Image (cartoon, rainbow, N blue to C red; front, side):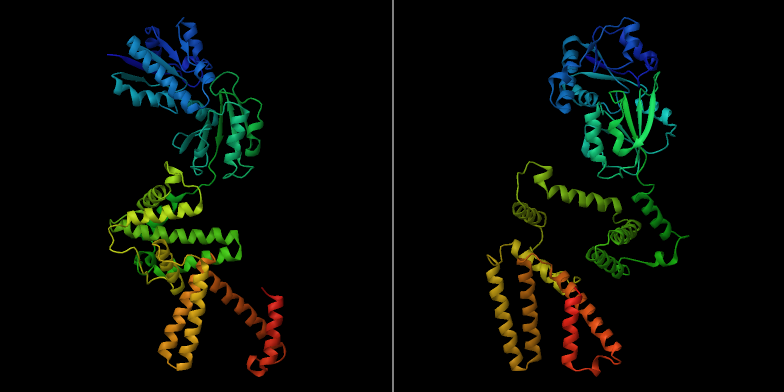
Length: 479
């Protein structure tokens, strides 16, 4: 049967190649190596083993993904032509080796058997140099896949394939989006080989180290010692029999008020522009999500990871212009696509509209109006909304003249609903706008209250004209 032997050359030391791998290489007429730039090949030279380097694919290719695919197809075709080939790669064939992944995926489909020969990976050499215990949580990231560099900040991160200063510079710029500029980076060169070098520098200098080449590895310690799993563990402990009595007594209903309070405290921190408070309040809000997830997990309904999987799946489905082949360009096109996808997901419902009574009245009105607009029931522009607002103001005045409290309440509600509609056309959140104005009124009211106290009385002891004078002063001095 046609066979490909997948062999690892180890982390660099020629004598790290296993005895079995050496025997297979000696007995193979057709030996290919992904790159000749590896010290382990000295062992093959020592035993006179002929091999063909495939570096020419790197010179011909324009992107690493295509280069790896071309190398893999070359090895597969060699096996089809010669029956038995050996393919050797740096490190271990099963560790961060894209060409091997492609070969394993395609081989069975064309009738080729793959035999994998275990080998020492570069991770063993790096761990030995850094004296890191292997039970630590590691993540290995390819510098040529920048989208992965910002993941797993809570783990020990080892970056490979930063072949030169330019690649290291691109990786650095990506990492600086998450890590502080002085975060330590250890640069290892020729790990496990004679003349190995190691230096630790701040992140902003990682691309300035003079010995960056294909034998260089970068190590970043965890950004933070805690992650979401620690929070889940804390919550499980609080809910356990030897945990907190108050936390054990809570259920979804009893926690509703706290969920709402924490959400509003997040909004308050945003309004105040305090990043420190926002960070804290987001943590409090996250705690509520974890709390509800743990209660559901105890009831075998769902768990926190189901929540994460659900929202990740939804975001990918509803962003085909990012994760798929859709070519939506503008925000309006994306919004229309979003609404259409929502309709398709909820098509089993008997209505496109929902009336969520748990929301405050202004928020409920806003959401219902957005649903109506998405379904096509909307004014063509803001002019219609303005006309409706004026109409409702007149109807409220007419109701007032009748003296009917029921009619007044109804028309006042219609007026408020029309105001929310105008706010939507103006791209203003009515709930936040009213909250801002209420806060502003409170500050001005406290101002004239203090004025009254300094004058030896309270508000009721001064004339309306005097209060109005202080009010105008408050408008000038306060936001």
